[in-house]
Image (cartoon, rainbow, N blue to C red; front, side):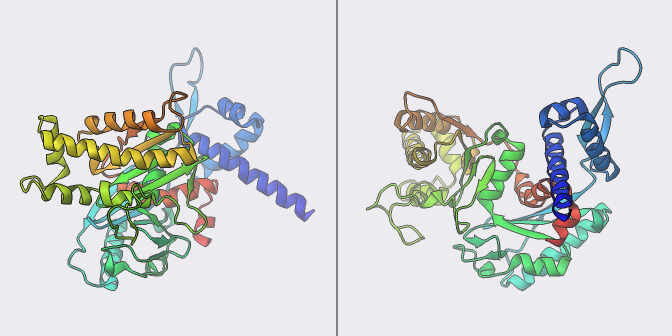
Length: 396
C-alpha cells in the first residue's frame, strides 16, 4: 500500500511538473495541455486548479467568442514568486530581483572594487539584498532563494568558489553556506558561462535547440554546454572549459599552465595585448571593430585572426559533440556581423560535417541585464523542475 501511494504521489508530481513547464514556455489552453501530455481533461483540470489555488497559474480571456464566454488561456502568474540573482565577475557585481518569467523587477550595481576581504563584501551584499526586499515590499514567503553566478573554477555542489584567476578575495569562500545563513534562504552557485547558457536556453536563441554551446568571449573564454536540454557539467562539475582547448600544442603559455590554449589567443585580453604591441592608439575591442569596418587593414587582420582562433575552438567542440548550434556572447557582441560571417564560413568549411549539414552559428541577442536573470535562473529553474513546490526548494 505504501509503495502504491508513493508511486501515485510521484506520478502526480511528474504530471504537475510537465504541465507547469508547458505553460511556462507558452500560454496554452487546457485542451492543448491534455493533447501534449496525454492526460485526461479531468486530470489536467485537477492539476491546473491546484496551481491556480497556489497563485502560480492564472487564467486570461483571449480573442472573441462566437457566443457566450471568451476562450480561457492559461499563463504563469509572473509575480507569484521571485528570486534574487547575484552576478559576480571581474568587471563588477550585479544584483537583482527577478520574477517567474525572467522579468527584472530591481537591478543594482554593487561597488566592491575597494573591498579587500570576502567578509566585508558579503556584508555589503546582504545589506543590499535586505534593501531590495524592503523596496519591493515582497514577503519573504514569496522569495524562492538566491542564485549566485561567479567565475570558475568552483564547486557548485558544495557552494564554494575555488581559485579563479584575479579573483583573490573569493578564493575558497563557501559563499552558498555563508549567504544562506545570513539571509535564511536557499542559495545556489554556478559559474558565469553555465548560468548564461541556462538563460539562453530559457529566454534566447537556445529555446529552439536541445543541444547547443554558448561561447562567452570576454577577458577570458568560457562555455556553457546544453545537451538534451540539460546543462552539461561533467563528472566533477568542470565541463565546458573550452577556453583551455589547445589550438597549438607548442603555442603561447596560458594562465592555466598549459600551452596554446584558445583563451591565450582569442580572449579579449589576449587580443588587446597583441594590438598594444603594434598600435598604442587602439585600446578596446569596439575600436578594433569600428576601424576594421572603416577599412583599416591592420584591424581587419585582427578581426580575421579572432574569427580563425574562435573557429578552431568551435570546430573542435562540434567534431566531438555534434551540437545543433553555437551561440556567441561577450565583448564580441559589438557590431558582430563581420566576425560572425567569417566564423560561420570557416566552421562550415572545416567541421567534420562539411558538405552534409551546415552548423548554425548565432550571436546572442539577450539584453545586458541577462547577467542577473541568468543567476536567478538557478533558483527559478529548480522551482519549475519541482513542479512549483517551493517548500521543497527551501528544505533541500
